[in-house]
Structure formats: structure tokens, C-alpha cells
Image (tube, chains in turn cyan, brown):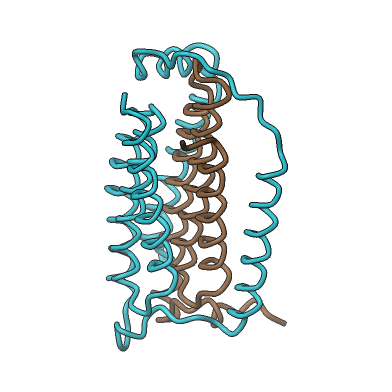
Length: 170
Length: 102
């Protein structure tokens, strides 16, 4: 457990890292740079999870997001490339309206967060994070767990079928 | 002192950045990146609620893992769709995906 001042410092460092790299994902004009900054954002979010005593989730975040999903995105970028790579990630014609909408949503959101009163509970987080999550998955949440497994299987079969393409002659 | 509100504001900011990316980009892969940012913002909120409102249980983390599972499935199918469309039309700009238009 970190001391309060250290965790404050780490929080602000990670927040600046996450927001700056997320902005870089959206604003850069080269989609390969966007994909690389996306990995940096995911790693920063894993740091936030460690700060919140969710070590298992941080490991899953690194494995699934910074590993698998980022590689998948880079692969898709490389396979769908024509023309100039430095002009590959441009804005469409309603970027101004989208910016106003997102800014308004952010201001409203922050205002409502400030207005809401949360009942903060102080309690000890479980010492064995992985064990507690395993108990939840194979105990109370066993049905959603199985459904998630079926969803992953279906998504995998669907992705293979879509990417490979159906042979029309057969 | 970092409170729950700080984490919620971080999640809200990340969500809005992701929403902007999803709404204002031409490239289909960039739109998928924006959706990934939004899902990550939701996960930050879930874990922060878990840590501050019910620290003795791991319900928020369990939900965050379900969100990660759905995000992985979504991005796999989405990128396969983009690849398939690119193979037919040699284009990954969503403004040109209009051959269902009247």
C-alpha cells in the first residue's frame, strides 16, 4: 500500500499520461501513431487499476488490451492501407459538431459528479485479489461467466469466417 | 488526497475523448479505437466504484472483466468486417460505405 502523498503523485502522473495519449490517439493524422498511443493509454489505465488495488485486472488489461487488441488493430491498419500513411487518419465533415457535443457532455458529466453524494465505505480489500475474483466467477456469477465463454467462441468463429470470406463456388 | 470524484472525472474525460474519436473520424479503424477508449473509461469507473463504495467485495472488477470480454469480441468482429469491406471496395473510409443508401 502506497502512502497518501505518493499515490496522489502517481494518480496525477497517470492521469496526465492517459489523457495526453488518448488525445494523441484522436488528434494525430497518422493512424500508426494513433495505434501506438492507444497502447500507451492502455498501459496507463493498467497503472490506475494497480492504484485501485485491482492487480489482477491490471494484468488482464496489459494482456488483453495492450497485447491482443493493440496487435489486432495494428494488423488491421497494415492490411487496409492505400495512399499516403501520414494522411491516413483524418476528420470527417462533422468534427466541429462532434467536438461541441463531447465538450458539453464532459461539462455536464463533471457538474453532475460534483453534485452527487456518494456513501463512501471504508473496508479492507480482500488480501487475495485473484482468489476473490475466482470465487465470484465460479460461484455467484457462474452463468454470466459461461455466457461470456460462448460469446467469445461465437465471436472467434464469426471473425474467422468474415476475415477469410465464404467461397461462393462450393 | 484523491477521492472517488477524481477517478470519475478521469473516466468521464476519457469517455468524451473516445466519443469524439468515434464521431469525428473518417477511418473505420480509428472509430473502433475511439470505442475502445470509451469502454476503458467505463472500466475505470467500475473499478473506482468497487474500491470506494464496496471495497470488501470484487463485484466491480468482475463486471470490468465482462466488459473486457465483450470489447475483445467486438473489436475482433469489427476488424474482420473492416478487412472484408476493404477487400471488396479497397476503402476503409466510412463515408464511402454507402452502398445500402437509396
